[in-house]
Length: 102
Image 1: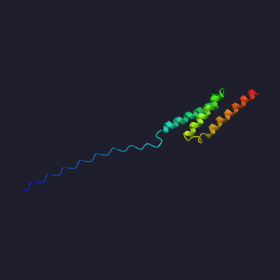
Image 2: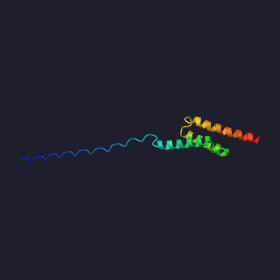
Image 3: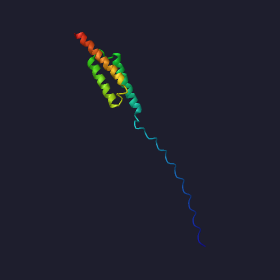
Image 4: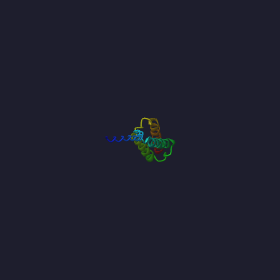
């Protein structure tokens, strides 16, 4: 008589695939961005509150620097009002200096 065919081995259960990691959002550095934004706002507030009133060159370069960074982060329009306030403060200080010199 013919030998019985060997029983086919049970197929091994497929291992569960690892769950796909959630795709990182485009800005996975949103927190870094927020921290950077908060830091820039703080710097603007310092200018407005008068932390560099006695040093117009530093005031002006700080204002330029903050404006440039906000522009790089595409946040310049969002903080336009605060930038304008700081710029007005600079104008005020320049006027004071001009009056003192006169």
